[in-house]
Image (cartoon, rainbow, N blue to C red; front, side):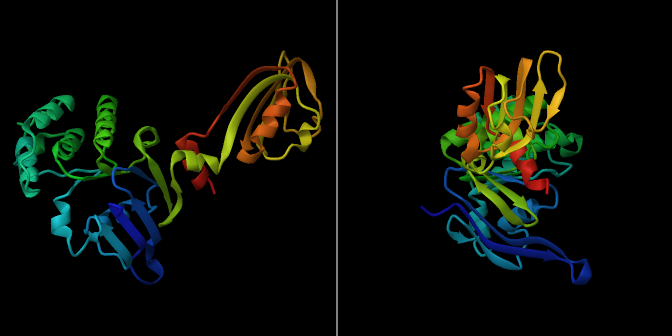
Amino acid sequence: MTDVISLTGLAKTFGRGAGATRALDGLDLAVAAGEVHGLLGPNGAGKSTTLRILLSLLRPDAGEVRLFGQDAWRDAVALHRRLAYVPGDVALWPDLSGGQVLRMLAKLRGRKGDDKRLAELLERFDLDPGKKGRAYSKGNRQKVMLVAAFASEVELLVLDEPTSGLDPLMEAEFRACLTEEKARGRTILLSSHILSEVEEVCDRVTIVRRGRVAESGTLAELRHLTRTLVSAEVERLPSGFDRFQGLHEVRITELGGGGGLGGPDGLDGAQANGGVRLECTVDTDHLSELMVALGTEGVRSLTSRPPTLEELFLRHYAA
């Protein structure tokens, strides 16, 4: 099946000479039909430049951009009828009401839309369509575009920081709508700084760093490449614990009144009257070895969990 979005070798430089900025440096991105794909990266990573090129608002210096198997620049007019875009900072016509903007956007796509669906979304997002654009707050301007996108019958949603300016209740409504669109089989590209939002709804995630893809895959695949967080209370540490491989960020605390014992060095078989608490991260291929060793030492409690998306994200940008 042809990918809905296919970006290959994108390069873009702004400026010339010593002051030039390399925004994209050979970026590749593929989004399959029916997939919800999260695009992550800090300011300056190249996310917005990527979306502007995808939407034919900006020409790349090099690379290929295809939407629905067609050239995104040459066939832009036809392709834009098949997608809806929500930017992170919406500007509306000051003298048009929200309702007029919604009707105009539907007409530009050549589709009348579903009036019942539109009314439902206006109620869910608590949006008054009778107000003029100049009277809307930033959050309400975002709501106009979100309602327009979710009410449309397009095949692709391109969302660039779409919840900017929304309160927590409206953010929750947005996530509920995303989940519904996902169930309907729409393809969604979501650029967001709200990692819980991405983690909740996205099938795949791409982390962008300095204009290139640092990692791309499902959350399970990305977590497989990193460490597991382990916290355990045991009667004593396993014999030879100081020689265990694959442990990082180790913290050992004596329970029952003792102080912190620091790292694993010199703790071969160490124990305390009240037991020991171990906190560490473990490389995936050494996790089972640690679990077996701890299981023989009077385990009182044991928890292990994969890193959150936020921890994965921060790890890529810690260096």
